[in-house]
Structure formats: structure tokens, C-alpha cells
Length: 187
Image (tube, rainbow, N blue to C red):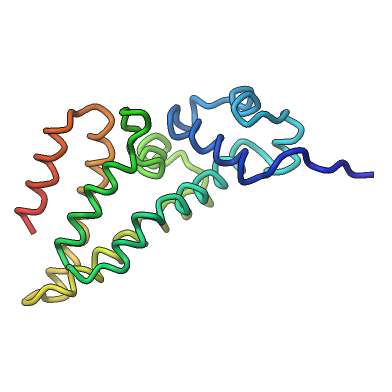
């Protein structure tokens, strides 16, 4: 007879997501996951298949959490002003107890690069493409922009967001504000 789970998967994934976000994928062990999630290794493997499975679910949970600011960008009718606000909202989103952790997806791409399993890279790149498509949508609201310029600017903004994520982990507030302001002087 199967035992009932004594935990909610959403709750334990939230805890795992925060652990991966703080430590990275490689530095997070199954033992650390057990302690953080409050469940044993058997339950981890039974529910999620592996550490990798927990990480994939953590990425999905992160994307849902990020929706709070992504929806604002999606609903924005302010063109570049809306994108700029997204950068500031994103910067605030990366903060935990006054410490910035960067973006979980950006951190993972940077850490794993070409060593990531294909399924995981697809999930990570899908996130990047979703953000880029929102940049394109907002750039199209601006006058006098050709498709070619919009494509180049959306690539620039996507790469700039990756830079902001990395920089947010070690730069001070004024440096980060300068970075954002300089990005939008270029657009």
C-alpha cells in the first residue's frame, strides 16, 4: 500500500528553488536538499526522480514567481519606459534580505553553460526567449523602429538583463542604477 505524502510538492520545491538560487546547481547536494526541503532522499527521488528533476521543477517555480513582474511588462503600453521599469523591478526581485542573488536562470546558464543536460538548457533558453519576446512587444510600441532595429535592440536588452543579473550579485546600488540608466540612453 502506497504511503500518503506528508508534504506539498509546491512547498518543498519553493525551498529547493531558494537553495539552488543561493548556492547554484553544482554546489547544492542531495543532502542539502533533504535538509532544506525537510524530506528524505527517498521522497526526493520518488517525487522528482533526481536532483536534476528537483532543479527543473525549481526553474518552473522560479518562472511562476517572476510572473509578478513579467506580467507588468506584458501588459505595459509604455514601450521603452515599460522595459526600463521591468529592469528596476527585476533588480528588486533578485533581492533577499538586502542581498541580491541575481537571476536563478541566468545563474544556472552561467554556471552550467555547455555542461547542462539538453532538457534543462531548453527550459532555460525558453525563459530567455519569453523575456526577449516581451522586449520586442514593447519596442514595437515605439515610433520609427524597423524590424531590424527592434531585433538588435531586443538582443541588446536581453544581454543587458543577463549583465544586470550578474552585476547585481556584487555591485552596489548606485553602480546598478548607473548601469540601467546607461542601457536606456543607448536605446
